[in-house]
Each structure stands twice: as C-alpha cells, then as structure tokens.
Image (tube, rainbow, N blue to C red; front, side):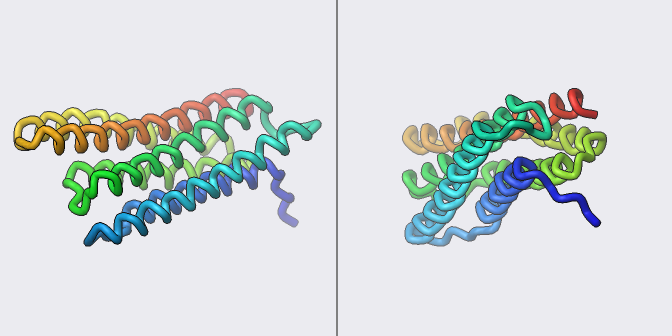
Length: 204
C-alpha cells in the first residue's frame, strides 16, 4: 500500500501545479485583440489568487503543526519563492493588458517558453520532494538554472535590439519593462531551484 503523502507535500505540489498551469496558459493563449488581453489577464489573476489562498493555508498549517517532514523554515522558504513566480506572471500579464501588447515579440515568446519549461521542472521537483526522492531533485534544479542563464542572455539581446530598432520612446520604455519583468520571473524560478537544493542537502 502506498504511503500517505503528508499535508505539506500535498500543499507544495498544489502550489507548483497551479504555477505550471498558469505558465502553460500564458504560453498557449493566443491574443488577437484588446478584449483577449482582458481574458488573458483575468485568467492569470485567478491562478495568482488561488496561489495566495494555498500560501495562506500552508502558513496556517505550519503555525499549528507539531512535526513537519522537512524543516519548517524550508517549507516556508519554498512556499514564498514559489509564490514569487505566480506573482511575477500576474504582474507581467497586467503589463500586457495595460500596454495593450497584442503582438508579443519573438523575444517575449522565447522568455515565456523558458518560463513554462522552468515551471514544469519545478513541478517535477515538488513531486519528488513529496515522494522523498531527494536524490532525483538535483538534475531538475540544474535545468532550471540553465534556463535562467539563457534568460539572462536573452534579456541583453532583447534590450539591445529594442534600442537599435524601435523609434517610439514610449514603446521602448514599455517593452523594456516587460522584458525585465519576464527576467525577474526566471530569477524567481532560480530561487526555487536554490531552495530545493538546500532541502536536498539537509535531507538526502
């Protein structure tokens, strides 16, 4: 008989699964007009609100738990770093709507692809954590860091190209903000990977 997963493991997998769903929606959704932008933002916002309620439940459970499967502060740190990712996605979707970005650039698409892939790796990690397969987490954490490193490079290229080709100063400011927000999301994913590796070191 399979061993029952502990409530914190289930909450963390719920949090990461919600992030993966939001990032996949972000990647898949086709924006054709300004009305689509409203649907796009509202859907990402729903995921962010769900994430907030899961974080609240995790904090509440931590405050009342006598024993936790991994150290209390590690559960809290994982919860906070995961929450940063969904907050970043919501912030970016808000910028798309606010600036009426109907035609994302190829660089924006590349960022979103990398972020979606990072959230898939994060979801694998929380599943492995839930099943106490600590030794298998490292390879997924390394992949997340590789994606983040590629996003660093992508940011430099995107901004350089933006200044070289775009003449409208307002558009430069708006697109630069979107690029930097996307890079921040990649950084948040890397923070999740770093926290996971700390957990592995303590528990493997």
